[in-house]
Image (cartoon, rainbow, N blue to C red; front, top):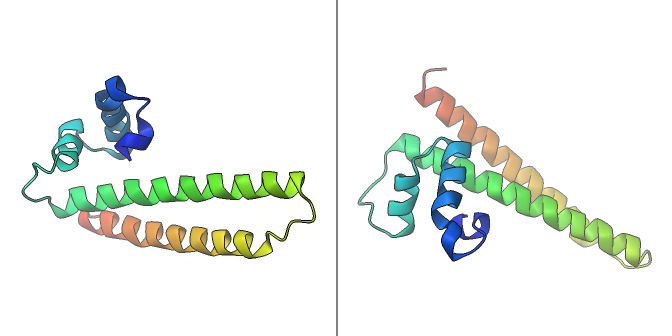
Length: 111
């Protein structure tokens, strides 16, 4: 996620800061995990990381669906139904996982 968020070598720490503020994680936590220095993580951090990853997956699938729509517009006779259906099913699975993860976070925070 950090590599995708960053715009090159000099943008790694700013990318971690952006991810950290977006997902309520410390940039140092992300850095220790990225460099495999963390010995362990607590449940709260794990669920926030999972939420970040699922959000990342959801955005990637949305990008894929957009690419499929563009392809269909360029080549109207292309048979893209199978790919579009699979992308929609995958998006539904990711959204379900996000809901489950959100419920876990809410339960931990006593909401």
